[in-house]
Image (cartoon, rainbow, N blue to C red; front, side):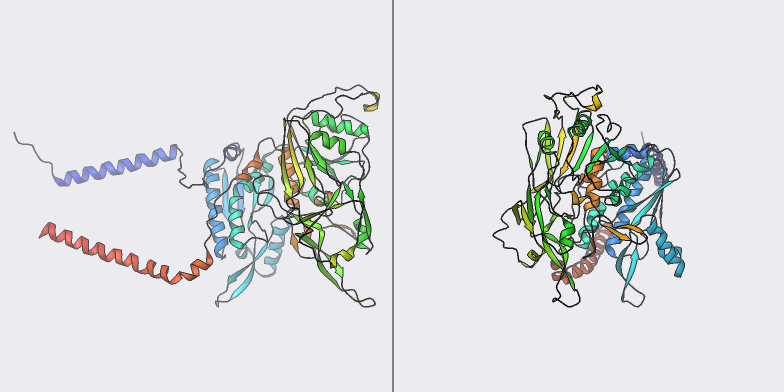
Length: 568
């Protein structure tokens, strides 16, 4: 019996039809079932589950206008590409409810209209930065770019600045850290826009705390995420109960026991406290006038409460070699004043640890007349983590102490600065016991009965041993008070990380979703060694030019030999 052999023509046609049908089925399946495989070791293209939940819960279209486009330096081009990839992931997860547009601001308007357009972007909250780009003649020219985006959702709009700008890091490192924070910055803005009602935050009043001008900049920033109030207790135990976070900023007067029990019961019911307290009093106004001032222990009647919760503010002053500057008059007596910035060891620049979501990737924090802090107590239900510390060369000073501006002329003696990494801020989280647990409750709450709680549910507090970290400078002008941005140093033009630090702390305390933990994600920054690249540049140029050509030649020879053997 002979088998009938099919024609090669029909066999090939059959295979072609099967291939086309298989590809069509694969396309249909890929449209119905979404899956992507992230093969990177640090999972940089895998979104957090919380991010996915927020994007899936969008009730309407969300518009993202990115102003990072056009003729950009290499680093910003890399940043643009990575941002585009992140937003593509957002679009897929949100079922195309996220719409993205990349805009070149230099093509939107020209001339004076361009200046007006740039001003509108700045007024909306986008921070510009200057970069060097090549012009048409091959030279270098300055250009203003806006590395950020405007996000709109259901009639609300917010600005997102995406460039991490730490002066102590290189440009490539800042670009890398910016890319690391893309997911958090974008989702944080989206979460803010999607909230129907904002949680309430209050600054405590009545004990000589900073006024609305001295905390004006951080209040303005907080108002984008919270309803911000000012509240005085006045002996009412329940005065704080409606607030998510209470901020104590720079008290100067003693706290009465009637107010302390209100704070204590607020904590026992799960309230969150953020303390900015100076254990040592120093008059900055006296120093500004060129006079010496006395540093002494500040008695505000909070030591027992903070000690009971697990933190002790030590009545010491710290000097640090890593410090900011103050203007000093270097002119000879009788001549015109000549102010020159000089390092002032009483203004330490504090280092935030990189292993905490609150402080990760922050710039140095500017402080003034700071004190060390310790953790105390044997309550094993309270977890303690330090958030700020001094540099490798720190000096502790006992008070009372005379502080004189003439000390700026003395060079620090390395042998005297023999302490290092002293903590100045601590986070406390867990179940606290009441400070008033074994005390009589007569006379509190204006004599009215109240439900006393002696042990808290899980809650969190943060204690910072320097109130100046949250205080912005205020300039009084004929047309009113002008608020200088928090963390901005007008003598050096540098902006420190104070605002981001305070914002992260308040968000962390008021965050039930765990959104702040997105800041913990870490991508490996695979930076090129510029010296090694320059040394081996010629070698790799030759490899890239000759090696592919050699492969093609060898492949051609091999193919010729095979064909000759098959058909000879």
